Image (cartoon, rainbow, N blue to C red; front, side, top):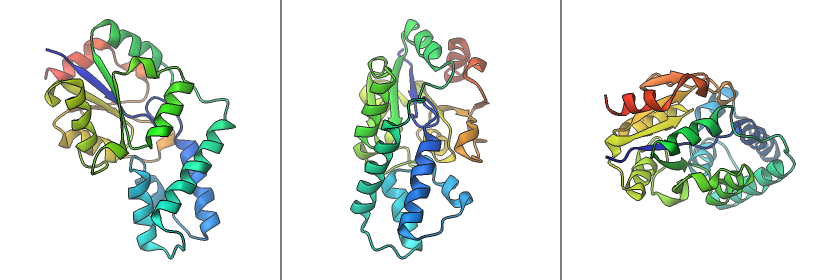
Length: 220
């Protein structure tokens, strides 16, 4: 029976959360609104549409939702283009290599826009390792709903119960469990204070897990 590992991208494959956060905080300043660090961190893992809809409902913002998303996308790309330090999180390349050697299907399911996913995975030379990449744009509801992970399982031809998700956010872990998938919570210090307690396992480094431990989790 085929097994699949589904990776979130930001904060899981690449430590780009600080870039997102800095970009968004610059936008808050440009828009003249105040968003606490606590509230900002609580939205990690959400789509841009969900995040800006929530912020817009609480603040008087002159720009419409499509304008906000376009501005964030443009600003984020500018940040990325001038950041030459973006690399895969330590031990990610080794984990991917081991999983492929053991015939796992690999997918990325990220709330980020499609162009962002393609840009980052291409820049890091990781794209060729994933059979499918699913964006928040590809499903009707973002995390914490399970749609994106169920879509990844469907495209991969793998039963959700034979899938394992690696996530760094509360929203992502919640979505994975709603999809009836096993989940490893990666405690990324740059992802804010995330409640990952619903995950089946929590780690602080990818050298804490192996193909054997992933198979064991899926088959529990």
